[in-house]
Image (cartoon, rainbow, N blue to C red; front, side):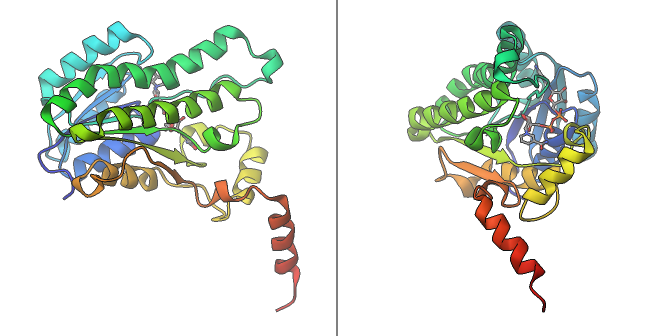
Length: 264
Ligand SMILES: NC(=O)c1ccc[n+]([C@@H]2O[C@H](COP(=O)([O-])OP(=O)(O)OC[C@H]3O[C@@H](n4cnc5c(N)ncnc54)[C@H](O)[C@@H]3O)[C@@H](O)[C@H]2O)c1
C-alpha cells in the first residue's frame, strides 16, 4: 500500500471526485479527514472507518478562513497531524458570458475554488514543513489551460490554482513538501451528468478516448502523488482527460473524420 501511516485531509469529499479520492487514500492505508459544506460528508468518513482507517468529518465552507482554521483544528485533533492535503472542493454554478457575469458571482467562484485552496494550504503547510514531509494536491481543470466558454470565473480560478501550486512547490520543496495540480477533463460526476445532454455528447465526441473519465481515474493519480514514489514530482500540472486537451486543432478532427470514412 502507498500510504500506510499517513494522514490525509480531502475537501469537497461528500460526493464525486472528492469522495473517490477519500476512498482511494483509505484503500492505500491512510487515515482520512474529510470536509465539505454538505453534511453528507459524514457518510464518507463512515466509509473510511469501514475500510479500517481512522476517519473524521467536518462541515465548513472553504471560502471562510475562520471556519477553515476551526475545522482543520478539529480534524487534526481527531486523526492527527495532516501529511497530505487534497484541495478538491469546487463549484461551477456561474454560467454567463463575461459581459453578463455579476461581480458577486465572479467573487464567489474565485473565493471557493482558489482562495479556498489558499486557506487550507495556509493552515497546513507550516506543519508539513516543520515535519519535513508533506504532499499537497490541488484539483484544477483543463479549463485552466484552454479557458471555458461562459465560465470565465471558473477557468480563471482553476488557472490561479496553477500559480498557487507552483509557488508552494518553490517555497517548500527543500522542506520535503510537494505541491502538484491534477487537471481533470470531463469526469462522470453529478456535475457533468446535470449538463444538457447535447453539450455532454458533443464533449464526449471531442474527447479522443470517446468517453467520460471515472472518478477513480482521478483518485488513483492523487494517491500516487500523495505517496513516497512521487517525492521528486513538484509543481507539475497533470491532465487526466482522455486526451481532451490534445484536441486543440480542428484540422485534426477533420482528418480523423476522413480517415474513418475511408473504406477498409
Ligand atoms: N467533474 C468534472 O468533469 C471535473 C472536471 C474538471 C475539474 N473538476 C474539479 O474537480 C473537483 C470536484 O468536482 P466534482 O465533479 O466531484 O464536483 P461535485 O459538485 O460533485 O463535488 C464537489 C464537492 O465540493 C463541495 N463544495 C462545494 N463548495 C464548497 C465549499 N465552499 N466548501 C466546502 N466544500 C464545498 C460540494 O458540496 C461537493 O460535495 C472540483 O474542484 C471541480 O472543479 C471536475
